[in-house]
Amino acid sequence: MTDLERAKNNLDGHTIALCKGNTDLTSDKRGISPMMDFIADGINLSGYSVADLIVGRAAAMLFVKAGIKNVYAKTMSRGGKAVLEQYGIAYGYGELTDAIINRLGTDICPMEKAVANAQTPDEAYICIKQQLELLKA
Image 1 (cartoon, rainbow, N blue to C red):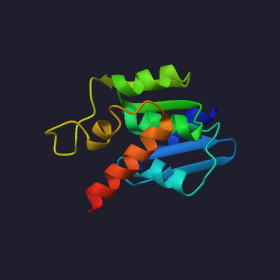
Image 2: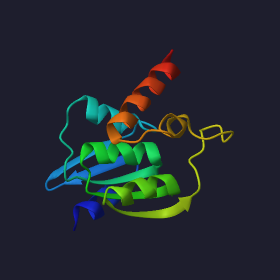
Image 3: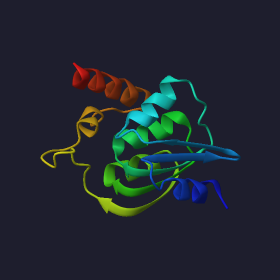
């Protein structure tokens, strides 16, 4: 079984699953929080495969920053797909959508808005971090 297949299997009951070799990581936190936590904690995710419920441009930028090599999303936005293609990350998805919508279903996801003009994964990370701080305030 490949790392990506294992990640997809591990996704059941979680919001994100990451696998590489004998190491499996999962999280039940919502949204972009798991990847932000992994990066902030200094966890080396280079070469991991990821299965995630929703991948938009923000998540895709974090995957690039973290060195993820393969991504599967139950739902992926065209913006997320474009980022993964730009950086040569293999991907698959269950459903492709034009945009990631907020939890209320009333607007574009705030994380997607935060990274709309970000040109690099590092810039996107800073934008997401700032947006999360604003939402907590």
